Length: 339
Image 1 (cartoon, helix red, strand yellow):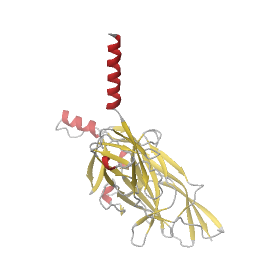
Image 2 (cartoon, rainbow, N blue to C red):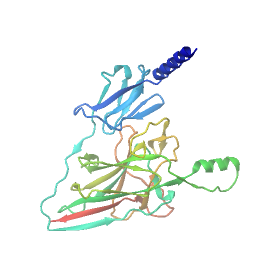
Image 3 (cartoon, one colour):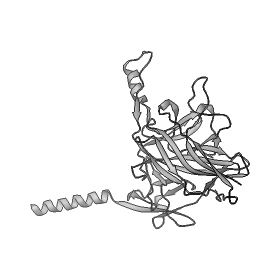
Image 4 (cartoon, rainbow, N blue to C red):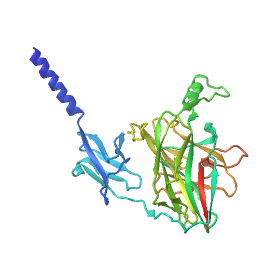
């Protein structure tokens, strides 16, 4: 009897292992053969991100499934699992990079400039930054005879959004009421943000500069995220530089990307956005009032067809009736070199 029980246990254990068997795949760059991390791999209603070593795991029984791979800076790839050779998938780069800018020479003096970040913390003073969206602040270089270097960047994130789900429930329970209280709800999901830099070309398009990127985890615990560039040469091109903030998607506390079990595409002001689970569980970049001759905001969405940078319009940012135009409330410190 005991032998039969042991046999049944082993059979059930073997079945469980087979049921949950996973196969490891690797994503690599087609030229450098280096692994590519943070590639979104989705199939059916499921998705997962590749790890730091370019690996990801799929159930063994997905041989007939089609994969859709979307990596930042790479061509989107559709491939059948059965067509993957040696468990390796190669992606082709689409990004063009411009060489880094260098100093003109030995400066005779250096001045420092500091723009303080927005201190606003109410959800009405922020713009939702959905997964796949990239906001950019174009900092103009006004003097051709100087060099300008970014030494620090501060990104203010509003930690609480309006709890519209609760408001909708109140409307259902008490229809016909003139007003309903709107309570705040703290950000529950962590998101991985990335800072990148672009140069504006003569046709007003943008090309990425070959400067290092910085990633940071946005959560409901902090308001200001300070990034130190004092040991890096982030120099402005002749006409200025676009400092971009990209929401790469949900992650854990360590910045490792998470699978997205459910997502959907939504249209917002003519733009396609991709949301996870709860469209209100999203970080907001704090804004402040725009002044004359100040920097210009740009925007692009990773999930739009033929996506390109374009200047932000009034309707994309919240604006008080009769009040000033809003702008990304980034803080930054600059070194200005005079020759």
